[in-house]
Each structure stands twice: as structure tokens, then as C-alpha cells.
Image 1 (spheres, rainbow, N blue to C red):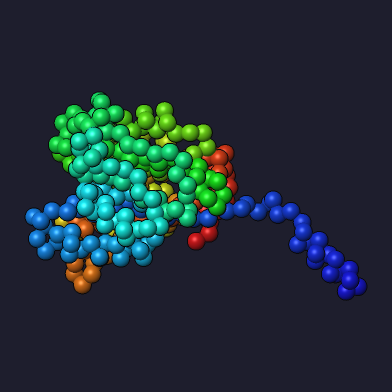
Image 2 (spheres, helix red, strand yellow):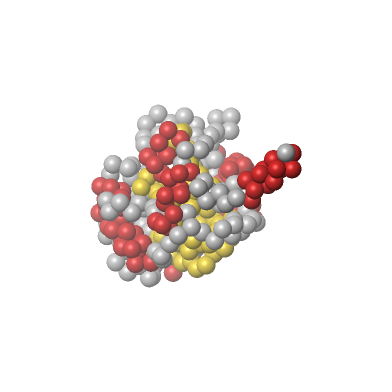
Length: 301
């Protein structure tokens, strides 16, 4: 009798478990405008807050990190502080050799970079250029990635839209949507990170979301969304006015498991004039075809 029970138990252990979905592991994506290095910031200049910011990155451990306003000296500091990440992206001026960058930092242990590049938000995207009514040249950095653990394919974009040009932001939305339609490969999950200098209701962001390919991660997270509703803090630890202008957008093949806009200060000091925005996401293998599995996994915390 005991032998029969043991055989039955072994049979159950060996039986296929196809009825239960195999939930993909979470990856952490993050966008952060770190504020450029300028002496004009006085007590908030980079050299006095660099360690605060890199400490945040070491604690939060993003797998895909999109930064904005990063000038060459800061790029060198960040590469030294993040040896486990590969940096993608160059400056926006002088054909990429100078000026602010919007780089991606990709965790080496988590992802392999299949290909990458950047383009300018303008009618001439292949060269240094300022588009429409923008005050500055603006860029998009992109990377086609493969997750090492399971082979999931991911397309990640990072951008910083103009803070002045209303037309430029609207045109940038259309340009990015067209670029994604032309360059997203079959089966790729999609993430777009950035400081958009626009709240979600602005026509520019609504235009980017209009075709239903992209969605706001905070909205998608539902009850799992937490954190501040003001992401530009102007170096105030507790800002009282503003809104969310730094966004994580997700596309097909992505389920948002958690979202947090992190309003952290260090005894009244902040690491940047923006707060970072973080999303823990599940990437499906095969994009749309695996969304049923992601939906089944959504119930867990």
C-alpha cells in the first residue's frame, strides 16, 4: 500500500504542468532626469549630489535605465559607478560628440544588446538638428535587447522632449510612433522612457498613446501604482505644485507589476531636480502571442 502511494506521488511530480502558466521574471525599468552638471546650481551642483544619486541607483538596481540631461563628465562618473551596466547613447550636439545625452544603461547580467543607436527629433533625424519650435536639439536613444534568462526580445527607447516647443513635442510624438512602427521587430516587447516635459493629458502624449500601442505604466499598474504625483521638484524635497512629466510607457508584451515615482530626500536634500520613476514589468516571449500568460500572472504581488 505504501509502495502504491509512493508511486502515485512520483507520478504527480512527473506529470506536465501545462495548465499553470509559467510566469516570466520581473525586470526593473527606470527613467531619471539627473540634472546636468552646471556651476550655476551652487549647493545643488553635481559634485555635491553625485554620491546621493549613485547611491539611489545602487539600491534600486534597474535592469533598463533611461537617463536625461547627462553631459560628458557625468557620463564618465556614471559609467564608473555602474560597471555592471553597458552604456548606450551620445550627446545631442556636434553629431553626438558633445552636449546632453539621453543614454540607456543596460544591466549586463540581465540583457544582451543586439543593436542600438539614436536619432534626432527633427525633420532630419540622422544628423544634429533642432526640430520645429524646440529650444534645443532633442534625441531618442534606442536598443534592441535580448533577455539572457529566457530569450525575451525587448525594444527600449529613451528620450527628453523639449520644454518650450509645444509643436516640437507634438511632432516628436508622431515621429516616435512612426519610428516604432517601422523598426520594432516581430515579437519585441516595448518600453519607452523619458522626461517628456508634458503631463499625461497634454495633446503630445495623448497623440503618442492614441493608436493603442503604448500605455502609461502608472495607469496600467492600477492599485500597484504608488509614489509622488509631482516628478519635477526644482530641488525642493517636498514640492507643492506640478505634475508627472517623467513617464514610463509600455507596449505589447509587457505587464506592469509595480510602479513607483520615488520622492526620496536625504535629510532635506534631493539627488536631482527630478524624482526617478520606476516600474517592475514582466516581458513576454513573443510579444502579443504571450499576453495571455502575462494576464494570468497579473494576479500575484
